[in-house]
Amino acid sequence: MSLGAADAAALERCVAGGGVAVFPADTVYGLCCDPDDAAAAERIYEMKGRPPARPAAVMFFTLTGALAELDDLAPHERSAVEALMPGPVTLLLANPARRYAPACGPDPETLGLRVPALGLHAAALQAVARPVLQTSANDSGGADAARLADVPARIRDAADLVLDGGTLGGLPSTVIDLRAGRGRWQILRAGALPERAVEEALGERTIGGR
Image (cartoon, rainbow, N blue to C red; front, side, top):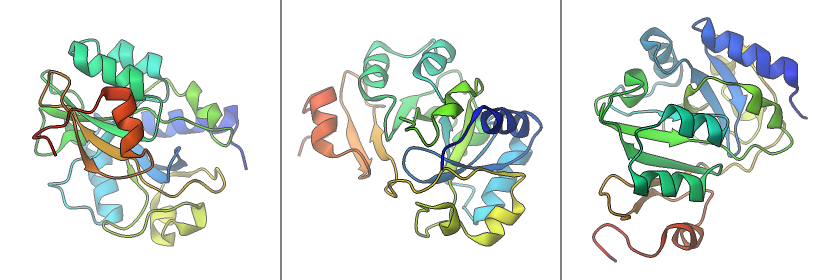
């Protein structure tokens, strides 16, 4: 099942209006809202029982959009973004401007960035111009949803918009910490992108060595 232009427009309207949507990313199904809307973010956390101390990510649907908005990236951050995105990764970046505070939670100086590699199932979402606060559409600590039917019914029922993009890969994004600077990185969560692929893109140096 593939999404179309009407689905992308509906998602943009939902987010702009303060709503919460269930949508297919490149890895698993997610929940999203306006990343500057504290009330919508609180709704998402309540829907999935996520502790407030755990930050979410900010997702742009195109690399061009992310680079245009995040114009203060350090050179090593920009290089990593261009090397790994779009892709099934979340990059932890310095956030000196404290953008998107509702998504950053208790650490406003860190931004989790996602730019998904949308396949044919969801390529239409590249038309969504605005970024979104994004987290997985599951109970906090529960199994990730590879199909819409895997998203808990109470979460689907509580959302303002539900988009079905068929069956996804089912592995969450690989979380990579770039905050140490100077090209150093560390994988904080293994996921859809293997470590070897990260090494090929960024080099073999990691924070603290091996």
